[in-house]
Image (cartoon, rainbow, N blue to C red; front, side, top):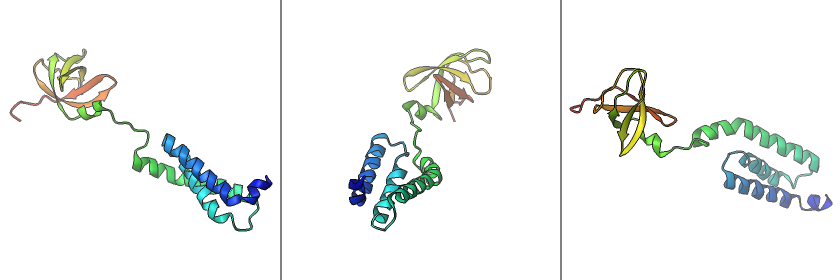
Length: 151
């Protein structure tokens, strides 16, 4: 313990590096706030503040940053939302290969791949018609409104 107290700025610098390395490895926006708290403490450590109070201050600063900044950062950086290639299909035209009825899924072809599909509004879509992919639910495309070829 006396070693840590003797080299207190180095202790906080070590924590900054440790928490930053963890954040870089995981990019979960969880430990970056503790790295920032340790960075603040790095600059406050030369002041005559007892070590236990520094730990408490570090935890308070890090918690406040975590609670108030993380939701904004997650929203802006879109962390945890992985787009897939399938997401690019939304809004694209697809060719109906097998009739889609109100009660049965059909089959559509888009970008050379066949997908099971159902109608977004329950209306039937005939074979060889063109439709628009509205959204994806699991492995099923939800398609809607028949698009005429001359549109």
